[in-house]
Length: 349
Image (tube, rainbow, N blue to C red; front, side, top):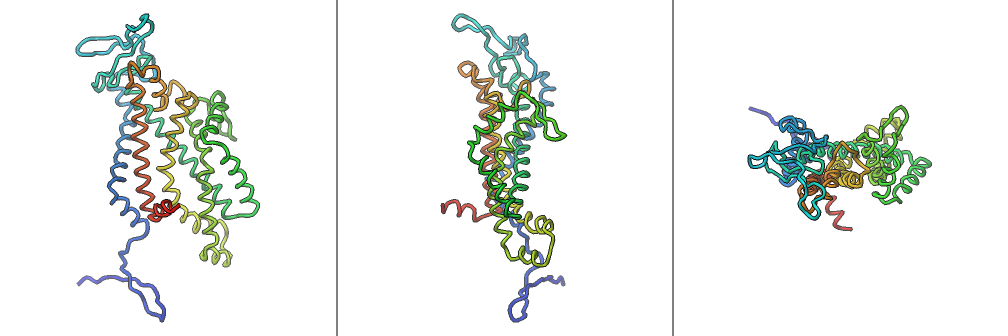
């Protein structure tokens, strides 16, 4: 007969409170709650699908025999069995300028039509998605790493360290996010930036990653600092300090593991915010630079075609909206799974 293995906890009077050995830990419970959230799972599936489609951009470009980064002013497109020019002579007004061919709704054949340089909009949209997702992910990772270092140092060591770091964060906090990002982009976009042995070229995707990542450090570092301050005063940390445990061991084995759930909750939220900031900077021509593309540059390319070929701008806007919506819904699910009281606290304010 199978025996049930039990573990126990000591009770007052020396008794043992039985507990099943198969009891789930906090991470397993959080994962179970997350997978039970249908909205979050649908959002996650949508994010995975969007990422896979964008990753397949080179395959689509090869299959459709198109180069989304090279002008195709003299190109031709097969529409209803006829070859038509990718850029047609305008028939409006004085007949000056050219009008790109509209959507064919045929995969591999200018599905969303052409832009003002005769390039396949759908192929560029896929490549743009790769860059937008890469920048949002990289900026989020950079923000979380820097915010963790800054916030944990200020909260754990306190004193002059906390005072200096807090004042620097206050200075950054005083600047409006978009204004600070635009100022940094205007200054750095036309020149390379050197950080120690690392050199970032002006056209590199690392530049918007750095700019977007750095401006959001104060917004993540402050809650991390507050949480570390609270943990620093907790009994188990004070006991470890009293026993002479090294500060580095306390920080990495006792403090940071308790901060990890907060960092995980920040990931989808920051990715959504960073994607919007990147789109805004690229739309203003101070983010991703030509010939590279992002969803923000796709919208910029379509501004002059809104009345004739609206799908150029709409495609980038719809891609951003769907991705940000999926990130926000999934982020809500992650927050509820890791910190179910967060919604109650927010609603109580």
